[in-house]
Image (cartoon, rainbow, N blue to C red):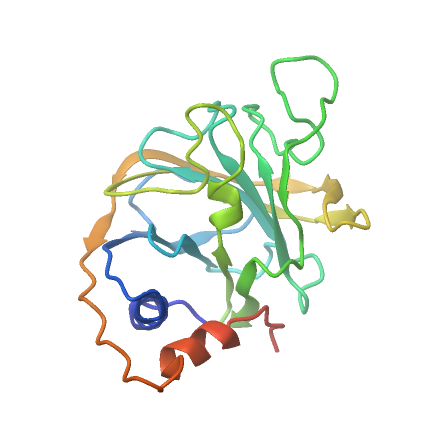
Length: 254
């Protein structure tokens, strides 16, 4: 599923209807030219992130104008450059090395200017400390995931239930993946990616041949007011919104 404003709004309203409440959500979009980038891991074209504080669902999509990228790591927050913010953020690893079966996993970001959080929990101490493993690859927290090529471009996207990330026992300033009207991002796409996982679905290897980046801070995100949901009729069950919720699942791209 390609993430669009309409699809995000529909999913958000579906969750809101199930929960019987309304809430504002936050949408950040980027088009090439808005900030400095390094294209060694793939030529950036556009990005989108959407955060729903009520449902704790994070949607993320990155589009490249070539077809080389095999994965990325990303940390996001509510303004400052995420780089170096140890014990505060999740680092997500999107793995499309098996392009027909992409997956994503989450770890506590160790604060280093690297992608070593999956194996080292503290970048301030020499050697590899026990990593903060939060969510596994292939877990039920992944609501939707896709990797596809079209018209010479490559799109990588996911939608995840980030409640486990937000409830993780990180540092006192833990924010996980949440953001509001300010947005910070630390995104590193990679080529030549080789990965391995343990039996629990967590990375034991993340090796790449080339890596690019998009680092930015204090970018403007849009607040999207969500109207109160229409109450479901008695006996209607979950209705369409419930079907949308129950139907959310990990997808394989064609």
